[in-house]
Image 1 (cartoon, rainbow, N blue to C red):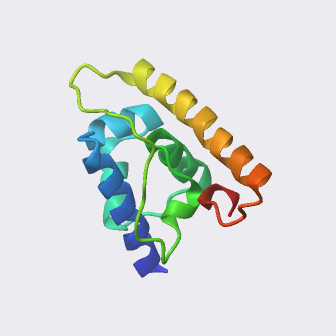
Image 2: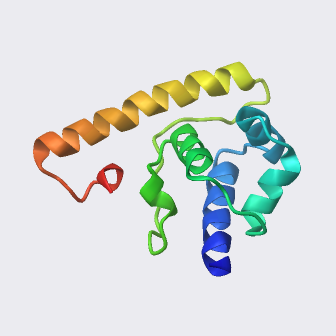
Length: 120
């Protein structure tokens, strides 16, 4: 179990760092303390499925991106690389990504592609 927490934490950290987002910014978006993000990333604390899904949507990936054995995560193309992004902006990005991920899921269902990561 502990090994799985570390893998999930590493994936969260990788997604966050790939966008140059700080732990503080992610914590603010999730309305938690920055130290909790640090504990998630180090595998010291369990993370709820709801919070994990919220993180995934923010970065444009489905929940399956955090599954054991899924190594390559291809997030939706979006650039967070700015110092002027605020919590309200992150909420808009989250909403847009949720729509985009749902669109991918609908297309996968229509195409009969049950291997799409968002259908798992």
